Amino acid sequence: MKGKQTIQFDFNNIMAERIGPEHGITEQELRDVQPIAAQYVKSLKDERAAGRLQFLDLPYDEKTVTEVLKTTTSLKGKFKNVVVVGIGGSALGNIAVHTALNHPFYNILSDEGRKGFPRVFVLDNIDPDKFAGFMDIVKPSETLFNFITKSGTTVETMSQFLIITKLLKDKLGKAYKEHIITTTDSKKSTLLDITKREGFKFFTIPSGVGGRYSVLTPVGLFSAAMSGVDITDLLDGAVFMDKVCQSDNIWENPALMGAALYFLSHTKKGKNILVMMPYSNALSGVSEWFCQLWAESLGKKLSLDNKIVHAGSTPVRSLGVVDQHSQLQLYMEGPYDKVITFCVIKQFNENIPIATENNIEPELEYLKGQSLNDVMNAEFEGTQLALTEQSRPNCTITLDKLSAFTLGQLFYLFELQTAYGGKFYNVNAFDQPGVEAGKINTFAVLGRRGFEQRKKEIDALCQRVQKKYCI
Image (cartoon, rainbow, N blue to C red; front, side, top):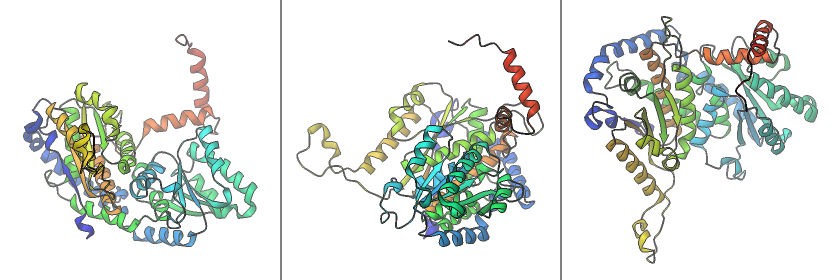
């Protein structure tokens, strides 16, 4: 049954009882924050009831699921490629879903191997060489492009939109419209205006849902469904986790506990780096998605009461077992400034035996009867133990099995945990003023209308600054 596919949050190795009070969190410290944590639960519930936290209700949006499935059914068999064109929250959720739930080499499987579903690509960078190289390998006549930008003005996405739509017009004439589907804000968006004028198929993103919280909207659901992912199961998993996280008791709510532990580890124990380290290649995309979610939501200069706080811990992507041979040395013997979160899967889809022969070199005899699964588990357990013995705080999220249902749980857990993180840090977890500042400068440099004054300021600054330190 779906309900038996669950995830578990084990935080023993972050507690003082296991690693000592200098680096670990004491039960008393958790008891001290329990009253305020309970208030945060009530606050989020009130905000949700008032319609200000729309991302929490996305798993219950049956209308959108029906719309997405109706569209994907109508498109079945028409395209060999689906290309998601977006950046940040418009891309990372898509990458996370496909990396987690599709074959690890999905795009180079045969049509039969993909069961007739199209290949899925994500164009999330405007690097000219990468863009040109990608356009060399896809035929416009065989490709559906899904342009995703909530604002409808994201410079990277709209730059590619202009290039690709011209190419499609040149190659396909009036039929080019059938090769475009857009996903953008439901109320105000330049891309929505273009979409309606040109007659493209389109999906909308609820105005109250920010990009990094949008994986369970058509942003992530459409390309997932196009590749055969069961998006109903994905959303059911999110609903399941929503119900798990209702309690205002910190010991019964994994999202609340996770936020509290990360916050206390940072502010009380000096752990300003949060390492996300899955022992599963399939979960590598989730760790990338999480890093944006955490960094963009909690890395804030100002608190909610307008004080300068420079809040937030720094998320870092790591991958077991690869980064045991890359980053682990630093984690083991470098500064005591990190919390490591492992993500592991109890049951992989495959079990790969290593050796069954009798004539094995003596030095390799220990591998007889083992599998790659056994080695993977041993490497995780060995790393977990080594870190714990050195009083390096770590915790583990365990999935019974990686499925659409458990992935939905994981997405929802991390999103809710981040919202609680905003409460603990007393910052707005749903804006991104630092990112907006960079966007404004980009628009000014490129000469966008309305940004003339900022362009003058940038030009004046460049004239005043002498490049003295340039070799």
